[in-house]
Each structure stands twice: as C-alpha cells, then as structure tokens.
Image (cartoon, rainbow, N blue to C red):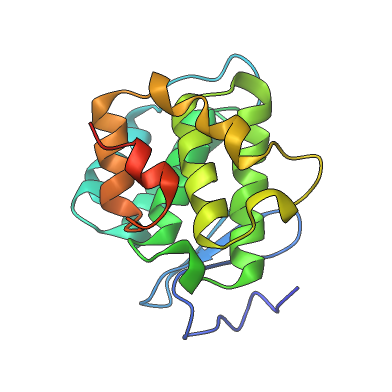
Length: 180
C-alpha cells in the first residue's frame, strides 16, 4: 500500500491506508475515517446532510469531513459508504483513479452491500467495476457485476441521476441502465 502521508497528486482524490480510509482531495486536504457498516444503519444525521449539500456543490473535501463526523454518530450506515465513495470519486471516472484507490472504494461498498444490499450501493459499485474493467475478475468473494446490476431497477430516479452526475462514465452498461 502507498504511504498515506504522501498522496499522489496525479490521482485526486486517493484513498490510501490500511484499516482506515484516508481520502485526499485535489487540494491535498486529508480526511481519515474508520467507518464500518452493518445492519440497522439508515439515514445520515445533521453532518450527513451537510455532506450531501457539499457534494451537491462539488465541495468534495468538505463533504468527506461531514460524512466522517456523521460516521462517528452512526458508524454502521451504508448510506454513508455510498456518499463517501461518491465524494471520493470527485466527479472523476473510476478508471482514472489508482487500482489501490478503487480497491478500497470497493471494500467500502462491499461492507455496505453485504449488510443491506442497498440498490444505490449496488449500482455505484457495478459502475466502478465496469469502468475499471474489473468486471468479474475482482475479488471472488464479491458479487459479479451482473448480480449488482439486477438491483439497478430498484433505484430511485434521484439516486440514478446523482450517480450519473458524480460518475461520468456513459460507456458503461450500468450507467446506461440508470437512464430513465
């Protein structure tokens, strides 16, 4: 794993570290979080709403700080995993991020999906896998892209638009499935 104290400026943002996730945005602002996901986790608290507002205005570093604060109060939220990855992508295609960064994003999404199989998490994860050309060659314990794609039909129009906006990858089949 790369040294988390020296982020690679060519790959903004990066997610580096071992047991926790360290997000570094293009301004070299670093936010560390050790959020875990599990059953019974639901909506973000006040800081989570702040993170969503920051995400909507493309203030990705601020969004990650808010999601970290929300995670301290709600450490099992799969919704936070979804939003943390959207913010960490910084509206940059997954294939432009390092393999390490994407692998950590996938682990974050895997933890969330394993517990409640939120369709937003499944759609975002499938899109990341497709764009990185992992498809079914990724971790064999993880679900295949086709298995994740089956949940895209259950996603709300708002969440579909949110993913399409923050993950510009129109060549990917999952991205097309998100189109109304």
